[in-house]
Image (tube, rainbow, N blue to C red):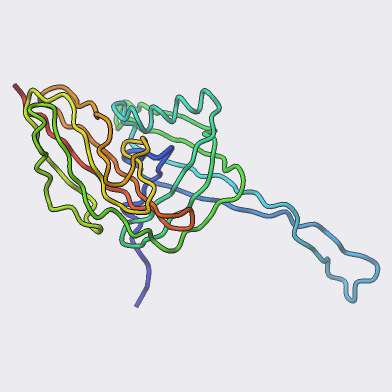
Length: 241
């Protein structure tokens, strides 16, 4: 019986936020130069080689073009135009506990608009320096709580936060325009919507969308650069007035 694993659920995290609705991810295409060191002293007629410089390679992404993905696809386009290098993770499905970690610059941003199909996005990233394959997973987030603007009421987050539960929801009062979260992940680096946060300490206000919309909040945690991160999603619903 095969040991093949479904790739569904793999995501590129660019500058601590995921690029939404990836369809196909390829890479990292690492390579190494082979230097010909064949000499007259060779014992046979076969060429001999030694290893030269290594290249971190490239990553390619095919995705649905999500124009509302302000902090993901659109932010990546901004970095592309600025020539900014950013930290990147390719996170395999969470159950695998494996990731690729590297720094990269965006080298391609090509949206497509077919008359008979979906809006698409083709992007590419050039790895700068050495990519790292992370084969063990960080311990993760053990607690998640928060308050909303109206009356500073506590958020009712569902389901009960746990290390291995990655998708959460909550609903706020229509009048609330922000929430503040407290994430518990001792001895971890925590990013909430790409903003660094201290374990057990309430973070700054996160602005919500208009009444009648949902706001996605992404929480990325990892304990060391040698550990694969865990990525959590909280959808905050602000009902219509």
